[in-house]
Length: 169
Ligand SMILES: [Zn+2]
Ligand SMILES: [Zn+2]
Image (cartoon, rainbow, N blue to C red; front, side):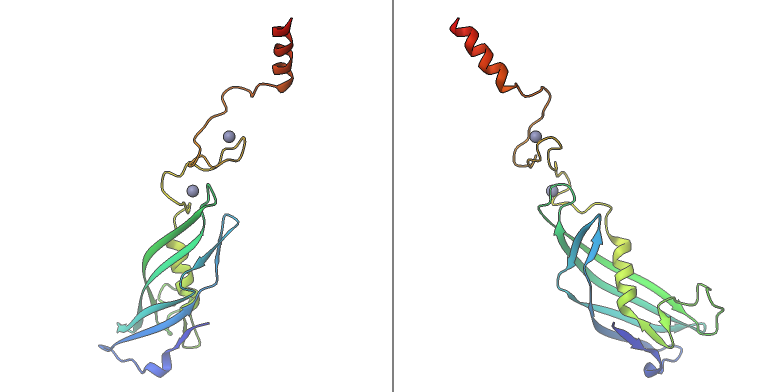
């Protein structure tokens, strides 16, 4: 877990601090599939300033997740530039929006915040390409490589044998 010790910063009104941190991201599980962060350890930039009694945190990161396409299971990846902002006033009442849920005992939990911020930016479906045709629901073949439909029932081999017999008569 990567955290920032806020007491160590001694931040005063008007100060701006920039911290670069390495955050290790566990794979995300979406729709039953695993998506790994690439790289697994992500550089995260946090800007810390002070405004009317509250500490303001601005986070910037660039996430890339890789895993199977949700339609055809081929390789897929998602790239997202993520920015997020949190406020924290230690004197604000609990559950107030000026009390960041990522700050506990003067420590900002950068790992949890980065993970949640990335999750919010992910598309509903992770696809190898926007127009991915997926797998055929009847035979399971990749419809991108082999576009086809099953409109008619496949001829039964027994019927083929029968008509062959008929031809011989
Ligand atoms: Zn696909
Ligand atoms: Zn098919």
